[in-house]
Image (cartoon, rainbow, N blue to C red; front, side):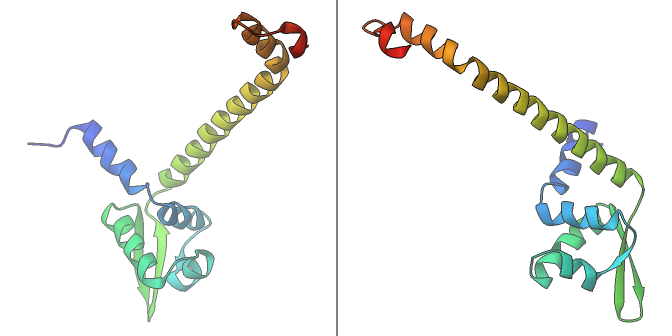
Length: 129
């Protein structure tokens, strides 16, 4: 029985659920890189990077080619870069919205706090002004 699309999508996004894997994909947006360069850019042990690269290879998000003793990784498709850009745009929007909400909360804080406190029994409005 085939896997439902929503389940396949969930598995795909779980693959992206590790910071080291996201960082590898970000670095590979600039073009293929040997493992030693990836290791220099990502603050993890070589064995951990190897595990994360294996996950990305299994899910076909990256390709690996051997050049002598060097293994060079690349994005399997430009769509991966598009996905990372979309994630950045969504996060930017979310943070912007949160910033706007925070600004509004700060602006409204004095008036809202007074109204809330005034509605509480036993609160003296003159102390809040």
